[in-house]
Every structure is written in C-alpha cells, then in structure tokens.
Image (cartoon, rainbow, N blue to C red; front, side, top):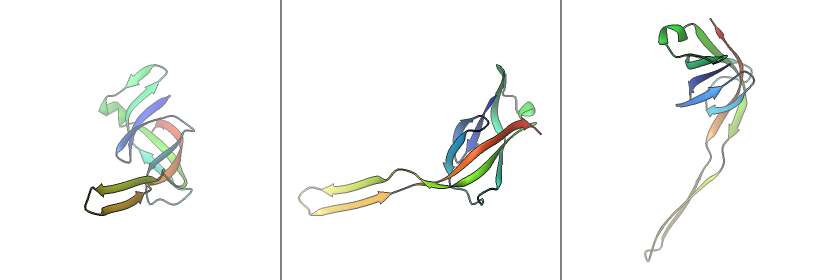
Length: 103
C-alpha cells in the first residue's frame, strides 16, 4: 500500500516505514504529522475520488532536522572587476511514515 501526499510544496510517494526529507516544519522531534492523501493505491486498487480519500489519513513521526547539499553560486562580469561568491544549504525535516489508514 502506498499513497501520494503533498508535503512541503511537493508531491511525495510514501509507504509505511519510508524516511523522507521534507521542507522544514516547526514540529518537535518525536511529534506526529498528518497528511490528507491525494491518491491511495491498495493491492492494485487505485482510490483517487475526493470523497473516498477524505476517509484516509497518512501519519508520520518527526525524526529531526537535516541539511541538503551545499550549492555554490558564483557571479562574475568580465572586465569590470565584479566577482561575487555565495552559498546556500536548504534545511529539511526528516520524517518516518508510520501509517496509512482509514480514519
């Protein structure tokens, strides 16, 4: 059984015991998150009707915070002496999916 959920502005395919990195949320470590699924597939049966999906819920446990890879940015203009160097690391929250079940 798996579900498609919207987490952090992206759609993620999740099943039980999957570990995901989603955009940072303010929940504490050990707390639970709940999502309304956009699509549920159970033993080959696809559920995509909004009325039926209202009865399903995906729960996840917050494991902690992580950082993404370092992105280096270099801006340069020829013959003007302009050179600028920047970097960025996106912050993520790591979660483990604990269940996909009917409410």
